[in-house]
Length: 302
Image 1 (tube, rainbow, N blue to C red):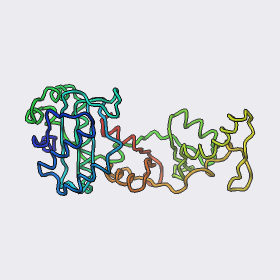
Image 2 (tube, one colour):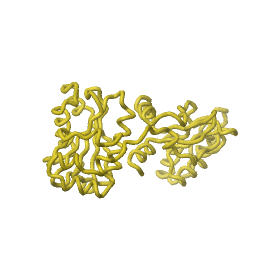
Image 3 (cartoon, helix red, strand yellow):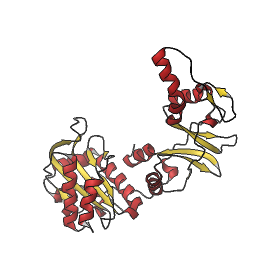
């Protein structure tokens, strides 16, 4: 499958006369409606008003990709617009582009939705495609751009394709002070807690560190004294916050993924459970780690 299978001149707006990304999205949504891609116009209009995506993908200043998953549309559809002048998001001069691509898909087509977004992002990363879009004067000009038409839509992406394999871990007996040090050094917000055989025992996040260490830090900054309130551990003995063991602060209930799960399924799980990071296991042992950022980077080809 290639992007040509998703392109339709009826869903291309050139020139796209607009002053904001939101207005551009509405214009492209109207093109989807006019082309028959929308099964429920009233519901689609409501989605545009109430579910405006905060995480609009921006392809390196080249284009904006607003995206929706809603059963108001009958099938995966793309709307493409090219503005005569750059439009900016939030009046930010560093986030401006002339191209806007609206991606809409039914809820059940999560896989196709992610694959299409990846293909569009890869096409827009091409200087030749971007120049062709900027030079387009009609919808037919856009649909005829070879680099856009011929971009392949990738096959199903799995957790193994996206996850980080070199995973930082800590043991349950590690102190929070030491865990904080290594997490800051590696620039990570969460680490799996593993046992002797690599089994996942829990997950330690920056939120846990803040909960245990922030009171001590605030007191030190406000009073200039190092004295800290000691905490009582699960074993009953009071210790200083930095000496609390990871096992006493971590989440013990952790959702883990298998390597062969699809990214579409993981994306749905992230939304349903409001979780943005997962350990990946094989035969009970940790083999990788996956975050929302990993998925976004894969979609954009970084």
